[in-house]
Length: 432
Image (cartoon, rainbow, N blue to C red; front, side, top):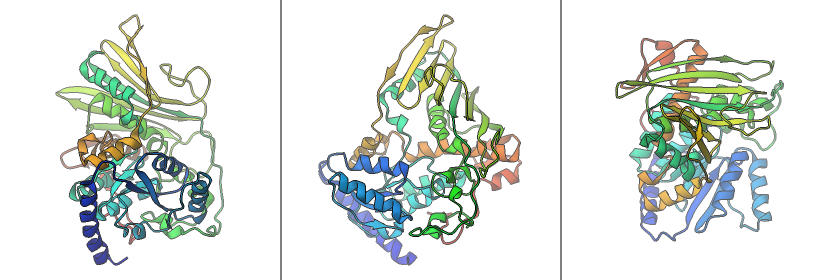
């Protein structure tokens, strides 16, 4: 696409979007889903089940994925929608209000920036960035083009977890000095897959996008892209980023001062590059007091912790917060319970599902950034913690973070890893 034409179109789309935003709250919000994989299915389900919200288009580089979604729409007696391989073609449509991004991690920031430039609001899956540099750029784009941008951190829209965080901050558990983010999932080996021809109907160049071009293998493609540094961020940036975000939210912190991570790829001899076991410790200083955050990712079999995950063997996904007067546990996305004092008497508890997709649509209609429960600046900051932990693991040393300059103090090698070498023309710009 001609860049000059694209930017001219973006200005026109911004005007159109502003006019549409001024209309009645009953005006239909037209949303396009970008990425027709497993998570994209949840997006499609959300936008086709809300009143006054319309699924407007689908984008996927794999024709079999988008065709499967069209079939699902037909079975549900929903009208078919246009399908695209290239999001930039979709963004030319001035009648689309928002895009809903469920692509691999390495695409999230660039697609969001393009959408903001085209005057679209954006719901983008976690993590919203693939590296620290992208966390800055995605927020810059949302601000410059005045877009409503929400990261898919569903827990932020759970009334139960909102209540839990309010109680933590109100001092009901005394001074909160530490939190743990838990991601124990019984993930099996991905094995090894050889190089093979690109499947028919797949635009592999577009799928690779900003990443370096690698020979096609099944393990680098659908879902298992999570376990390669070019495209994913390991389980810390997959399931774990939910818990990272909750930990930062509940502890009430932003930038860390010190980050140390260690781990490895244990048990399995397979194609996976990212660690299947990692523990990261982060230190924060708030009003002169030090607070600590731990992220713990484990694969295969593991114990439960603090009652999270129930009694049977399986996944342990959640958070714990430790205070001078008790502790609070969050079990997955929508449930919390607590224990008070030395006796461990049961304290406040609640369970209630999130309404995250609904929150995004409400923000699109109101144009009030503060109404988004996971506004992009919050999501991007949580991603920074995850990225720094992964860099510490990969380099095998502690990082000292400078929040004023967004650099690693005295460590040029670590600072260089805050960004990546982008493959042209899929470059996240220095100036959005």
